[in-house]
Image (tube, rainbow, N blue to C red; front, top):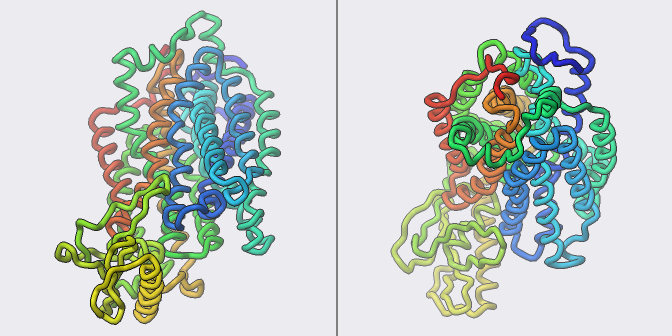
Length: 570
């Protein structure tokens, strides 16, 4: 293809070559995101399959940490594959990344579970997640750079916005395939073996992706640069060892990507966790509502990407961050109102309070599943978290055995430590507890708490008849639109911030630190914050604080880039 990207033409239609570039790059990236997000969509099932050696709460947190492991290594993938992309070319690098991703995903589908091979199962699973993270670290920067370098000046926002839809479409595709499997078999069959089908399907998607990408030509910007001998021999040193470029990398991370990442994961993944884990909405219903909101909201990626070519990238991204900060609390409270009104009513009429000595309350963040939380405070709080019951905290005198107040009813907790004391539910005297006594006390405590919650009308699950699907989907769609505002224009902006010779490396690292670390750890961090505070909305402080900081830094220090000529920016 000739160097059409040097022209500035807002009105001419896409050429056939440009359409093929966008379609091929986007489709391959959709499949790669599908592979990556299958794990997130099936976290609850995977927790049972691969982390069944620990208690359910620890298993779920452990599963989330394995999910996050894939995000943790994304910046290292960005360094590895970004360097290759700037030295040998965009096309061949993201052929390698998709092979690694597809094969790792397929192997998850045939991996024996914990019951079959013991501790080797979660170890291998986490290893595969690490490979997926490395692959994804090289994928996005390659696809975004490749498309942007084919786009005409003045159309990069529009062209790259199609790449921006791929993460959401990949998530949508994963939800759709999972949903199809769920409805076609009994729940117990899906939990036993049906969950493997979406992973196995990835081998077909891998074949299609590789075939499509083999049809592509190298980026014209990279090809011209290499012909002129201007390509970088040491992209890592040029990108991060020289302050003028490193400063731009840091501004891209803290003034753009960190906030974009937390808004993205709040609007899609945390919303799903909130519906299923906190509000106890049936998983199939929650997935359908998320899928509907994604379907409605996805066109806005292209709308905002195109608008960014007219008015600039920065105003749209900053507006999305500000709206998220200002409206997350009311939106999530409204989701509770429409998805599980019985829970909202119970909270209002019979609030739950944990009365405990703060000295015996732990921060129950247990990523490796080895810690034992045996104090009466920890047992009381974990019992409530497992049931999705919000609570407030009340300080008791030192040495006091914790208790739970449900309205006017008080349920004493107990200690599971072998030599601790236990308090009977009949308020008799405290006596030394042998392990058997603790087990009996635990059964009595669970029954007492369940009876009290039932009497106070706390629902065990969201009542399907009372879920206002239309309103929940509308609220979820608003969250998705925030995602499209911050994410739609950002690929073009990142491409325009850096010179062609080190673009792949320079833009990939801040993108994957932001999305891999700030975004990828959001579900785990927010879940732990909620478990510690008892407030089901407190986990929102994590994305709000980061988005607010990004807004301030972005407004003060990040420049607009829409008029940058990336061919002259070498």
